[in-house]
Amino acid sequence: MLQVVTRYHVSDDDLTFRDEASAAVAVLAGYEGFVDASVARSVDDPQLWVVQLRWTTVGAFRRALSAFEVKLSVVPLLSRAIDEPTAFEVLHRRDADGPVDAASDLAG
Image (cartoon, rainbow, N blue to C red; front, side):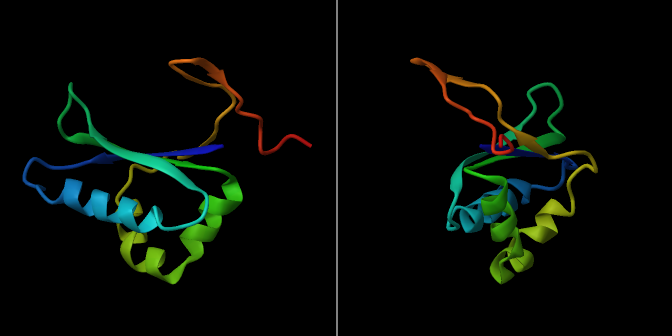
């Protein structure tokens, strides 16, 4: 599983960010391998936002990013992200029932 986390500094007067991020997530949700997503704002710093996406594999995420519709509607949002690593391989995951298998995509 792949988790993609992008952080954004959003000015107080940018009231459209949530809508733009939600629309980008809606586009990505239509691609194979999409698991889920969230758009969140920091409770300590309301100008700091995060968009979190989960994908079944690195390949699924990369294929989605290469789609024409994504390049038009999602890449402009991603270009506003803070420049830092964003893709993380999930090595352990747990839900309310206990550990969930999160075998590495990179395992041979």
